[in-house]
Image (cartoon, rainbow, N blue to C red; front, side, top):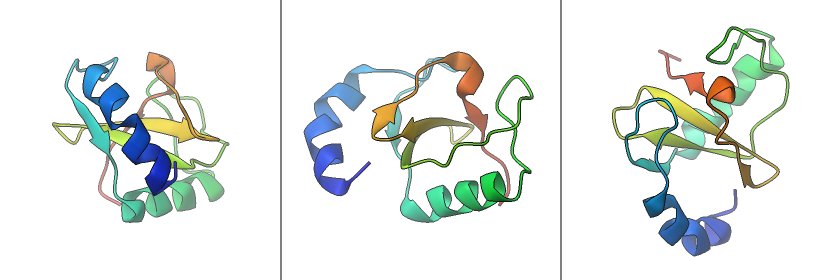
Length: 90
């Protein structure tokens, strides 16, 4: 998600919660998105239910505990619990 879209979406982001933890969400930094996309490219990333993630992220939200990554694809926030990615040491 572009920086401009994130600004416009801040009010929406403040209302939604992580579908897994129920925690508040905030935009993930670009370094994390780059690392997640590298793992996707190498075929080494699974979502919460063990499916290999194949589609690159245009951005991401992360819950306030830092545990769960909510994917953003083509500037659309994916709030489906099965698609959430567990944050790990990158």
